[in-house]
Image (cartoon, rainbow, N blue to C red; front, side):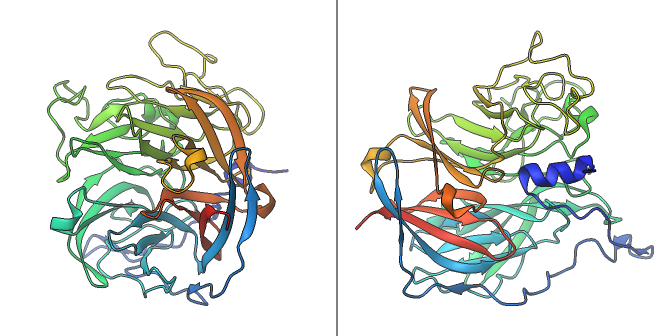
Length: 409
């Protein structure tokens, strides 16, 4: 018999160890002696560039492209940011941040990261550059931050200045409170809007009761300034008993986010339970329903506890929903620099169905879906567009990969 947690792992593939590490509380310091190590252990074999790789053809309904493996051996890579010089920053979930040069060579782990809680789905997550990176060299990362005992975590955001192979002057600017996760449903993606606000997607920590409470940050999309403070025009900034950082609520586990190139609105994607993965355009102060309404069911096949069905007054419907969960992750609106046939298309990583999802849009409306890379049977974790117009992907695995999609030659 498959337990609910096993079902979660099989649906989303976010592997979760069912036993917690034995922790020793150092009472004199009030700090955990375990949980998240100060530095993650090195992988058995470091990641390496793929030299002279032969691209494989991929025929889309609209374009002929080729897929190349650039780097292999990344341990559960999660987030990807492309630097102005074409180098890339890649996070590995066990707590390593690496720089990948244009020729595919991979650096040793960049130093300076804060302490990361690593268990199951939790670890080092997304990475994004400051909108003014050329001037300030600031890099933002989201990660699972341990509590003092080291037995629970919450989503957090830190920023530091990139100098060579180090982050310096690192500070944690946002903390999800209270810390309720044991290694599941931590999100997280980071997106800056045109006003310089940082949107942080999170999860519900598998604590449904926290999601509809405005004094808790579980299941919330938050909007903060680059220093972590809450803008005064956030929808709950002046409400007593509510967290000022909250932009929208009622979310389950958001692992994708991107800024629409025309409307300049933030779109997000989130995992449903068994069925009911969602694409949303979250509006300020709106409630997107979890766990009161959902298009999915529990992993047992029974209705979600506390759910009233698929709709309820005062709660928003998904902008687009999948009745069979793809396990949505990274998200990209493609600008069409190298593959004009895909211009304006929305791409999403699929963890559970081992695919890259291409959506055609009419305005904001989804009018067609195509699934790419299915023959590779690889979990697509993140999707980004490079300055060359190629699409860069992260494959989430024990020995994960950095891939590139560009026009067939």
